[in-house]
Amino acid sequence: MLPFPHAVECGAGPRTIVLLHGFGACGEIWRDVATSLAAEASVLAYDLPGHGESLGCEGMGGAKPAARAILADLAGRRLDKVHLVGHSMGGAIATLMALADPDRVASLTLLAPGGVGPEINADLLRRYAAAAGRREVRASLAAMSGPRSVPPDHVVDALCRMRKRPGQLQTLIGIAAAMTRDDRQGVIPRKQLDALDMPVMIVWGAEDPLLPVEQAGALPSHFHLHHILDAGHMLIEEAPDLVAAIVRRNTRRRGRRVRPPLGAAAS
Image 1 (cartoon, rainbow, N blue to C red):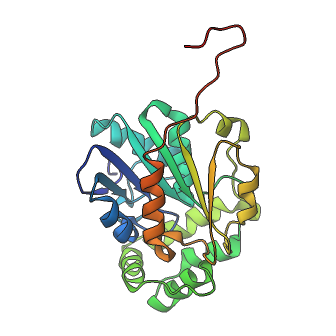
Image 2 (cartoon, rainbow, N blue to C red; image 1 turned 180 degrees about the vertical axis):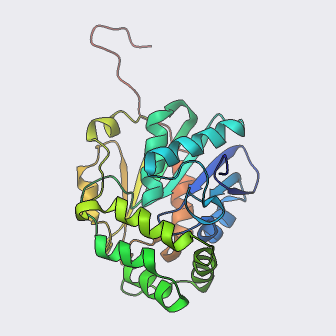
Image 3 (cartoon, rainbow, N blue to C red; image 1 turned 45 degrees about the vertical axis):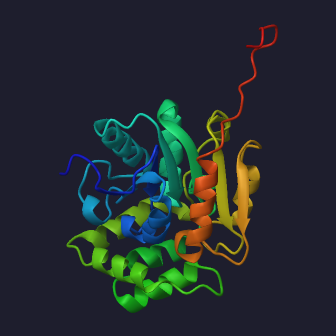
């Protein structure tokens, strides 16, 4: 078993931005976003445990072990402060990383994140997990996108290559079954989310067919929320330039001020 998840690094700059894809994808889908961000930052695009080059690595088995594995890899790279960007399941993993090691996380940008509410289109996710050929992969991506979105060829190609790896398809089917047990997904408690004091930006497609955008209404008030009209769940592919601009803006924000206890002198 590989000790750490695989990541591809590009760019250079004073900030390090870590990109975590959603379930069933791979780091290659960030190509356009990473290229834009690499002009002014060092960018790490991971293959999540159980996906692509990270098939069979430490951290397989759910969002929590994946979060621990990626934090361990960041520590091994001696990266003390990073900006996390996570899509869907990658958003849940990024959130768990921030909860486990808040001093390491400078900001969180979460694209239609998992773990916010229990509702999930389980049938659609399981269909995507089992998609093997080019036609099935493209159809699944289209079903998770906005009504006028067309899956990019480079994303379809990357996912088809990934799914040809021995054992990959069976692993995805198993992960999807565990994620959607009883047709629900696990939820990160609201009390834990309230404790996050780094800048948090939530980005959600208004036409998301996989995770209902209404889940964003239950998030803490200090989280910033950006709706993308006409977009579905696949925000990286549907609006890469806008996603890059939002990430860039969020990495420049400061976290909320923590109020001192009553009776304490303000510094």
